[in-house]
Picture 1 (cartoon, rainbow, N blue to C red):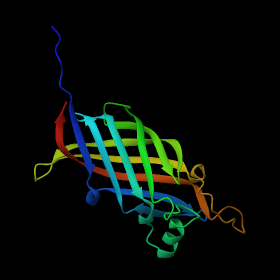
Picture 2 (cartoon, one colour):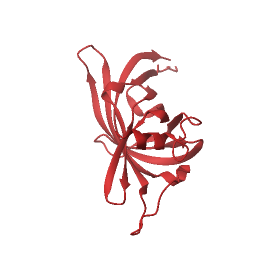
Picture 3 (cartoon, rainbow, N blue to C red):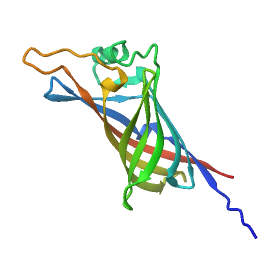
Picture 4 (cartoon, rainbow, N blue to C red):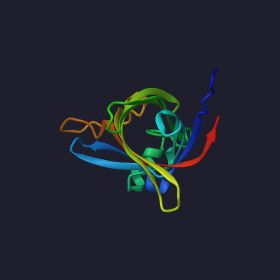
Length: 188
């Protein structure tokens, strides 16, 4: 006798009020400038609460880049960097989510698309756990870190410094605090 097991597909959406998508870049090779994307979304579907089975899509509006300096933000939105008018979104789609220990550490491999250039990247994630909020919603929390070379996406603008070095580092460090809210589970 063959039994069929019901798989519970769970849909998740980001809580943008309690999530942050930040990046850091060295300026003049001596200090760090921090920025973020103010408008982003994450849609995910998992088998139960197993995030290694996740089908995830992250999207950020490039015009929402925010470093706290209007002139710099306008430069980042322009043709030298994100070219938000022509490329309004950047996306990340994980291709593999793998637990690296039994303590909530994961490696996330996936495709990052900026300015219609798609490259594979690897990120590390720490699972903060699942909790019920005071309103009965199930939430999942993650801290995600990584680094990329911006030139891999043709974000090449720079200025040479008179004393040597460059104005803006090629390395971009990524730091995200993500809180997902579980939607109604779907049984298939």
